[in-house]
Amino acid sequence: MIERLQAPGAIRVEFQPIVRVHDDHVELYAVEALARGPRGTSMERPDILFEYARRKGQESAIDLVCIAEAFTASALLPGAPLLSLNIHGATLTSIDGFAQRLLTCAAKHGITPDRLMLEIIEHRAPWVIETFRATLDELRDAGVRIAVDDLGVGASNYQMIVDCRPDHLKVDRHVVLGCSRDPWRRAVLESIVTLARACSATPVAEGIEDSDDLALLLDLGINTVQGWLYAPSMPAQDLAAHPLMLR
Amino acid sequence: MAKRLLLVDNEETILFALQRYFTRVGFAVDCAKELEEAEALAMYTKYDLAIVDLSLTTTGSTEGLEIIRHLRSTRSGARVILLTAYGSPAIEREACRRGADAFLHKPRPLAEIARVAERLTGSFA
Image (tube, rainbow over all chains, first blue to last red):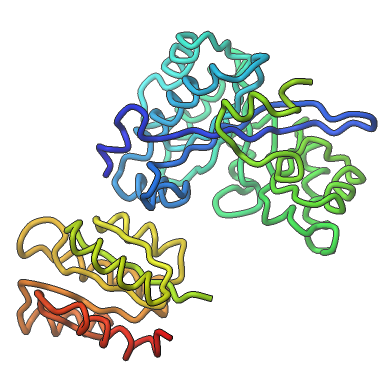
């Protein structure tokens, strides 16, 4: 299966809008590329796909395949949106010259660095912190935005924030979903808003599915959001016709 | 809610037959052909039953035992049937020690595998 996943076209990429909610309008902020394995296999589920790749020791190779497929698929999107890509922390240090490889691959698809955001989705020891930071600095200097993904669950913790110095904190849906009805979730979100402000980072809430949760987030000062309330993930050709892309 | 079944075998024909049967009797079935795929599935899904072939790569390999160990280490409550064409008393003892609930030699009629599965998980109806 691992060889099959690395064949051209085996991994499909869908895109989900990330939006900014203003008083009188909603604007597209970015589109997140989300990888899916071959249809009819267990790898259709991204959690299985990446857990399998990790267990095979091919996490970084699969990351590169996903990025290449995302660049290819994004050509169908109108308006040159900010493109958000998931990347395992380990990939930043295990691929020689990762930053240049990423930027070169993007350039081949006509994508400039300022159109890229990298969502770091894992950061497990042991790692070479100097290489990790140097790679992020190289990307940041080129104009790529950095986000810590899944904040609040798993390995997405304070260490990630300290090591990544992110521009965005993407708050995991587990914290967001139902926040309007749960004082504990609200308390966590309040602390993230304070943290983001102190770090000059922008919080992004994932998993917005109802308007009550959205109202609370806006009250707290989080207006960059992503979720089914606005749009599910979908193939590029479908998203290209979505009203958010046409505004 | 449908009971969840993990089928692990590197032979497509066996997976196909077992998947078709157990889907018909109401299970939600996931299939894996490799150790790492089975482990990944078990990380994210709570299974009621796993039917696992002992050898997934070469003759005499014992990936199935690893899968049983993984299921038990994740505190999965899944009942486990281990299938093998190359079993031995030593392998059977090891499978039981790791937490297998049943050990069946292949080839085995589908009806017999189903009977054991029903005994372990309760009525299919």
